[in-house]
Image (cartoon, rainbow, N blue to C red):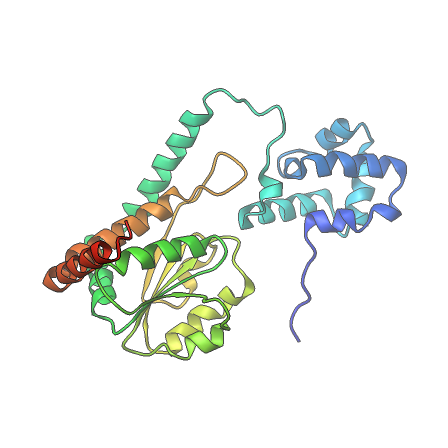
Length: 281
């Protein structure tokens, strides 16, 4: 029997409002305004913020299903790491000076941490496989979907048989049934992924295809794949900074187009001729 799904921190609060005393409701309102604050506040600081007693904080966290305040705080931190944007929103006292500079610096760090750890040998092996495979499959869910579409679109300029999943109107099973040992698969595993990501890497490897996983999820290196390309997505605000992921997509696509040689240039030339014939651009 599978383990029952645990309710999120926010849903526990909202599901308990009818059982809360007035002081506990005041505490709940204060937390719901900026729920991520509990990850960095002590019980005393939170009590002062809501103008309630420490005993009220203790009763409150127990009513919503946690054994202690520290357990509730750890749960919020875990949900922040998973990417829950509501828990990553700062309060109105966050300094506003230098926001652009902080974003630029974080973006720079993410690009460096995403690209510089990839060796030339790994990059060459992966690009070679992307070009030589019978078909190239690029998979992405939620935040990973636009990156899968971008990478697939760019690589399609240099080689045919590039397929991006999931496709409209198809189940994953219907799509996966076509993947074989002569294929190459690139899977984006970015937070917060759907549950299917837990079983998908093993299923993809069972097809015999060469699998690459790109992403920032916890346990990325433990997922079954030939290549693992971790990306840094740390952020200065409530949503993940995916600049490093985009840079990695650009580097891979550029290397594939350059590595395609004469056949790639011929395909690019054919595409440009068709653009002219169709008057598309």
